[in-house]
Each structure stands twice: as C-alpha cells, then as structure tokens.
Image (cartoon, rainbow, N blue to C red; front, side, top):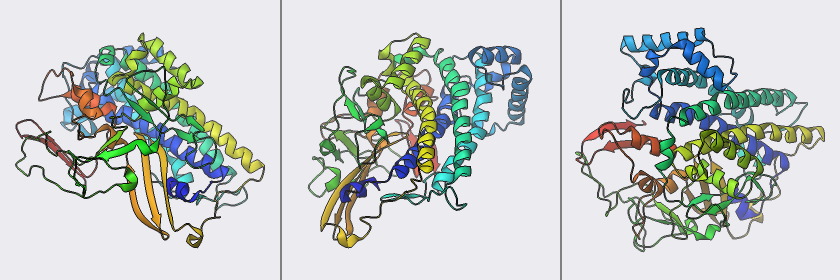
Length: 498
C-alpha cells in the first residue's frame, strides 16, 4: 500500500493518516502486552512457585508498586486456588510447557503469584481493547480497511454505517482502558520483575547496530520523515549520533539461505531487484546438525551498507532517545533510574524487554492525542478519507517503482514494488524477523540472534530457558513450521500450523 502510494506519488488525506496511526498504535499496545505476559513473562516467572506464596504478602507487594484495584488478599487467594486446581488435576493447561523449578528463576513466590494473576487479567484485557481494530479495521489481525490512497472506512457523524460520534466514543473508552492497564499493571510488573534480573543487562547485546524506519506519521506525504517515533540508524552502540536511512543501501544475501539468485549466491540484491526462488538443501528426517558454513535458514540475510542491523522496539526507542525525543527520554531515564542502571543497560536482553514497555506506555498516551485530532477534523466537517485522483491506471506512467516504510510491533518493515504497464512486475518485502533472525551473509557476518546468544550462561542444556529469554526478547515471528533440534540431531519439539 505505502509502496504503491510512493510509486504513484499519492498523498493520503489527514483522516486516513490519523486512522492508520490509531490502528497501528493499538496494535503496538495490545501486541506488546501480550508479548510480555503470554510470550515472554514465563521465561522469568516460575508459575508453580506461586503455590508457595502468601496471598497477604502478595497483596502487600502489589499495593506497594501500584494502586490497581485488583490487589486484595482475597483476590490473590482465589488466583492461587485456581492455579492449585490446575496442578492437582495434572492439567496445567496454558501453563503446561515450561521449565518450572529451573535454577535460573529468581522471583520470590509472591512476585510469581502476582505475575500469574496479571497474566490471566491480560488475557481478558487484550481481547477487549483490540475492539478498536474491529471499529477501524473490521477485524484483527490484518485490518481490512487499508486502501491505496487512504482508507476504505467512511467518516460521517450522521451515518450509522460510518465512523461516527458513537464509534469514536467507544474507541476513547477502550483507549483509556488500554492506557490504565499499561500504567497500573504492565509497567509496575515490568519494573518489579526486572529488578530481580539486573544481571541480564549484561547478556544478549547483539550486533550493536540499530535500524528504525520510524512510525506514526505527522503529515500525509508518502514516506515522510516527519514521524512521532523518528527514523534513523545507530552504529556501534553510539548514542551520540543518529544517521539517516537511505533505502538504496538495503540489500539481501541468500548465501546461507535456502534460496538462490540467478547470478549466484555470493552477491546481494536490492529489494527492487530481489528474487525469491526456493532452493532447499537442508537435512531431511532424521535431522542432522545444520552446518552454518552451508545454507541453513529459510530467512534471507538483509544488510544495510553490508552491516547486520537489529530492528524492533529497542531500535525505535534508542533512535528516539538519541534524537532527543522528549517523552521517550523522560520515560527511559525514569526506568533506568528506578532500576538503578545506566544507559549501557539498554544494549541487552533486559534493555530490549524494557524498551518494549517504554514504547507501550508512550504509544498508549498518544492514542488519545490522535483521537483528539480526528474529533477536531470531524467538527470542522473534514470527512475526506481517500484520495482517488490517481485511481485510473491509464494515468500512471509506463513504469513506476516505489517503497513503503513501516514499523510493525516487531520492527522495521519495508515493501518494494515495480509497476510496469499498470501491473506489478516485482514485489519484495523485508520483514522484522528477517533482519533479526538472519543467517550469515557472504562475508560470514552473523545476524542479531546469533550474536546476541554468544556468551549466554546455560545452567541446563536440556532446559535452556536462558536461550529463550534472549530470543523471546526480540519477539520472533514463528510461521508455518518450527523445529527445535539439538547438536546431535535429536528433535525436542515440533510446532506446526495446518
């Protein structure tokens, strides 16, 4: 969509920009909270340990860090009883697969019980606040109202079949609910848990180079640099300088990927010239150890100026912080002060997790700002939602190419398109988990995952929760089929989507 708008020189209306920001913003807030509680927290929280907790002490702990209303002794006792029933039945349900009792867990039982309670609360909270996507995007995930030139969602205060006053009132209610949970539950929990794991500020640093395309447009021009979270690059962990992003310097290798380029796999290709031709040469069951000097991944290896880059919330917050973003600096400095660590702690597994929380809070605050902008436009009778000036393909140039930058919750997302005679000639996308999970390139340079794991202490190789902590801190996207194999070819688990 953005790539086509860029190729054709389309400027979207103000209301379309605001609605896109709202859809992306609530996705950030919901997705980051889900990640913390349901995808990452159990790397730090020992659920079964919560059975040993004193509910009264848990209540005191919860009330010492927040004025959240669900913090009574009775409430935590009920959660503990529910958890006990799971354990005694032998059916842990959603808590079944983990390394309970692992020596790497450090939280006291009361903190574990508090986290379990909020894990369950977040399940109900997230399915409620994401109703904003139903109003603005028709569904979640993959909103259906995006359209080249704007949005397909009509805005009319006098129509029941459009975004009207009642719809905006509902969104405001849900946005306030989202913000309250982030402020009173997520951020206090994040700080409380992180305080027991400060040593993880010394692990998982990664490649030290960070790329952010920037997000939340503040004007309507395609690929604008006027963004609430700014665009930029940080090199070698140096926060004193932010470099501009030049999309022509992005290219992908397939040297160690199960793809092939017609000219050979030793050279990289810019996405406009990109080719995605599978060439699987990996092991077949029974699985063998993957040789990293050969092809070993379904991910390509994107590079910026031939350098591996980390993308995601940490990259966005580092670029914003180094660019002097007032609100981000306030929240980051507050978090660092409360944890008693310096800015160098950001370059770590712990920093990656904390940055996601910072971004969630700042984004939750902005939802109400964007809603205010939308309300003002409607009051001025500015109801335009789509620019159809270039809707007729006969008016397009014979050949056009464009790119679209976006920041998905997981990180920098770029799409590149070439249009010839009104038809798409080539379309390539470089997604966040490709940047972070990339294999080695033609020069042997490792991707962010591989570098971040170097030096990680592992207490029990058969229960590598420490590895999960760092990998989950990136929030990887797992698609289609994932296999976990040890160095001797033994398959630990297989996850399939059918």
